Length: 247
Image (cartoon, rainbow, N blue to C red; front, side, top):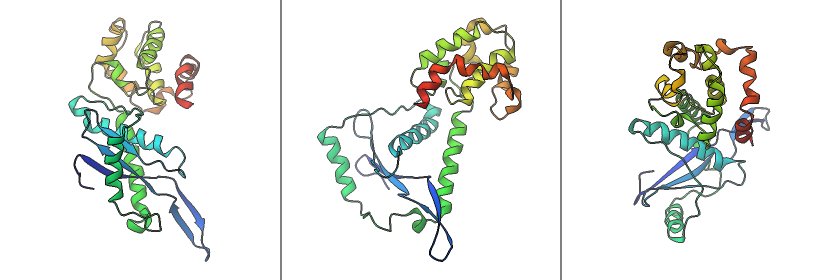
């Protein structure tokens, strides 16, 4: 919707689409509760984002927040901004602004609340593909010279410290790239530049080739670490981080 007094209202598609057999044995594709509302309030010093609490969509709020964080960070990375969404207890004035704009939106809970009716199921598929492209771009190489800017989880210092302990023992482009690639493959870091790596760990300068490092950290080249026992051992090395992001 067009912005209204600093408020932006959007609808986030639900990608959980299921198929079932109708009365005449036809296959029907349907997204249950196909979207949730998101309201972005740009008036405060720090913009507020309200995400509809869908009681029928498991973890919908968390997933929408994740997608929104990815999307905003990607769109703003050109100006050096990185978006991080944090839970916030809004005050009465802030809540009333959002409530007022939502009451003006005519969307009764009935059959009209359907992406299929408005756009057809292909629209839902398109939104899913767009999100996957956003995530792929998020994992691509960025331009920052600070390694912590590439960390995708909250505890950047822990990731940098654990990497330091591993990298100090290694030499050779493939060996040094292996733990970096492991963290990329597990969505813990985005693909860093060689310059950011060397700035954070200067002792690697004469141990790694920039071109080989860039080659090994290209996630499209899966053959480099396929059936690699040394790669697999990093499940144990980074078990603390992996445990945190799966809980």
